[in-house]
Image (cartoon, rainbow, N blue to C red; front, side, top):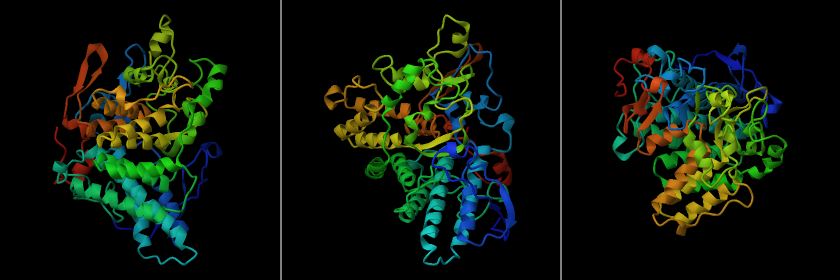
Length: 487
């Protein structure tokens, strides 16, 4: 459906430097039905395109980051169970509508509405900077949405996959999810090429226009997404360059600053209730919040059915107990001689408080740039550079005086350096932005096993077709000639 003459003009919202100033941030509600006229009118439409509900989080249930707590009395929700059990369809009872697909194509529709109109706009000299910023942000958001679609509903980027079906790729204001029929899946390589092109234009338009609003894309997050895309495409020199640009402006937090707070509480109660890991100085590393409130995420409740896997917790204790501050993020510190301790289990996820303080999900954070560049260096066999980036990250994660820097001479087999980089990447990005599912796909689609009720074991085998989510039934109905993904 092409752009109509009437749009829902979206109300202005409080721009956030911190969420505490506006707990309802991005809960944008329409205030008037009118024809947008000014550049600011179209900025309001663009803001309405930012995803305000989850569009990636349940993919964590398909990974080795997740396990089920068999000792709790709480049960997994019916909607979550298909993800964890590697069902042929991730939707409950083959529901026709996929909220992830729908949310991302809604974003693209809003963005394309703005970009279509901007083709007709000739900004004045006073308007030019604002025009460029909004257009650049729109292009970045479109690339961001297609990055998620192509990494969930199509196969991985590889030289021999470029002609495989990707996803529908409207570049004008067609609402694929709601009204369009007979859509076509563009070749996988073409979609990745469009992502690169949009991000390149976005960077040109946004450079020199910094913003502190962490609920909107800006030049720093665009460069981080370019680094991520380049890594996924095997373009390691570009990944190094883009990540380096981010690292020069987005600084890491020294987690030692939380020690006095931990000392005033106890290991078990430092992060629970009204205080999450994100409420510490760690918050300054977050570059982009997205996808709505994260406090009620799948893993938030201590006695929830789904928990972080013990593998993640073990990674925080590889050099001893209570030396890596990331242990506080995943360790329950429970007494397993007590019934409540058994019901909780060994692991928790304390990124977000469970009460009162509201934060959105993490879309980008500074540490991702470090693990991107370290991986790119390792794959280019520039091992000393890879370890330097890793050391610069880890010294901020370990208690003062406990971290011993990694050296190339520590590894007789240099493959161990890449392995360590990937382990730190897994730990740093756990439950952020769906990255573990995407990483498992690009790292060879390994076999994943999930233990479940009554001793049942569910397996996603190596190279399983279910590493690609199925095209929603609603899209199959609208576009009967569209190829669906193998099962």
